Length: 146
Image (cartoon, rainbow, N blue to C red):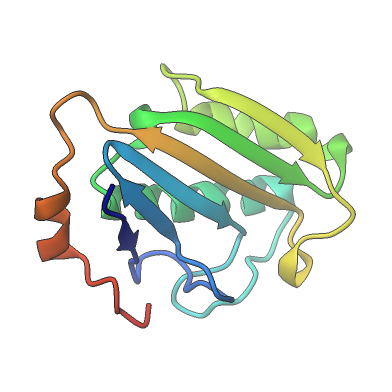
């Protein structure tokens, strides 16, 4: 099955040898987003609430680039450096997923890149008949340096 690399300047550039997302068939696999400001690549100031908001805004930009929305997300994984931040993260998360709650795992980790307190990755699925690989090829260049 063909794969299409998804890249958008509306989300932070990948900081390593990976893609912001990869589309294949009706699936979009989004790499974990940390709370970096897309324009500067700097970590957002603030607490886990501010960081979770930025993470989900970044994830939303990647979803849009893959022609999806939060309503297409079927699974997320949340990484927190402190499970004590769970309630604050969850309150922000609920705003972005008000009517459609995907399956989710939340894991406490020792550390995240750049000192972030939260990272979220997602898998989204297009509705039947929505995804057309040939259409994506016109919009996204797999060789893009983004």
